[in-house]
Image 1: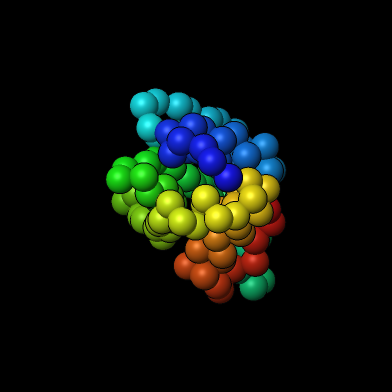
Image 2: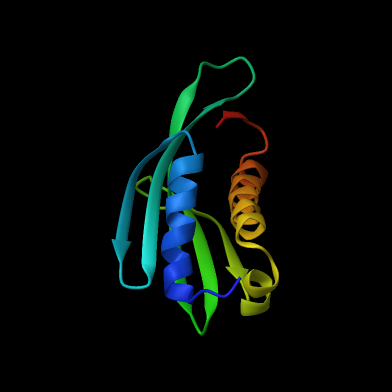
Length: 119
């Protein structure tokens, strides 16, 4: 895949926005894209609750960085994933975008492994 990192940021954001059922807002700015989403979760024996996240995608030094933050008063950072240029240039576009989605979901599930999620 031969695409500029700034364009890739927007492409990743649009892909996540379309693929995540709970996404409700996408916001673009220079070299940055934020996808806002919610997920339902349940602890054993409890009722379903809602959790909100901001998936912030940005680029610097030709790398792609994704920060996953829970939207609360504490703004808890759930995880960060950094992709070096060789990662996204050596993979097909579809494979890379699917990997990003999978990595985001895995970060959330790992942080809250005691919960059952509905994506």
